[in-house]
Length: 213
Image (cartoon, rainbow, N blue to C red; front, side, top):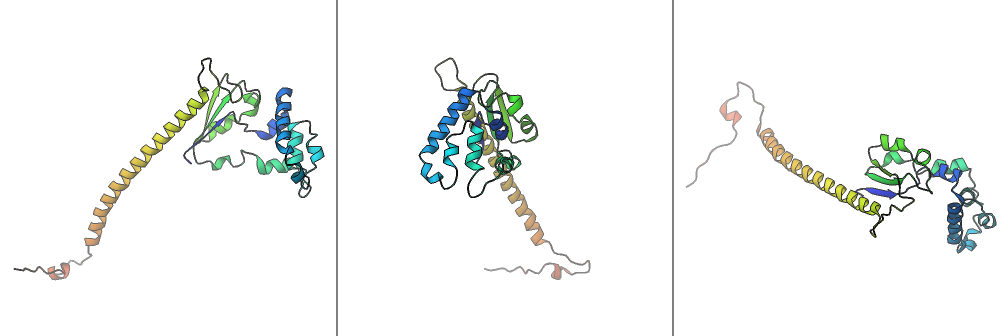
């Protein structure tokens, strides 16, 4: 993987679930989750309390019932996030990650509450593009053109590709030059022989010149 990009990501998930959303979004997302899982009701009955699951009144209650209050291995809300916090292994990121966010995002909430700005200050792999307007995954323009966030991401990937291609070319030239110089050094090393000052020419030069007609 060369790089990654996210549009309107929810990075502080636990705080997001606990704070809740404005009721139109909360109800809409919750209804979508229930409809998506309703087709698996029979399969889920052995694992969770489906009656309680589909009567959930918030996204947090739905998430907690589905993943924490299981019949075989129930865990606490704290333990669940200890294992599933998306920022838990963020230090292991080894490719550039661009996050495009908006200050007026009604789903993610205010940036000062739900955006881990310290991550973008301390981790060299994470980049933040924060716009004043854009909504949640919107970033539309007045003209009948695609969302500008998509163009930014495409340009970002082009820049990454060009950068790594240049890096590989420079490494290839350096490796070739190092191999050439290294070969010369190895040649000199292979030809070098330790001799004492009293050694004769015959001892220093073991080869014999021959002539053929």
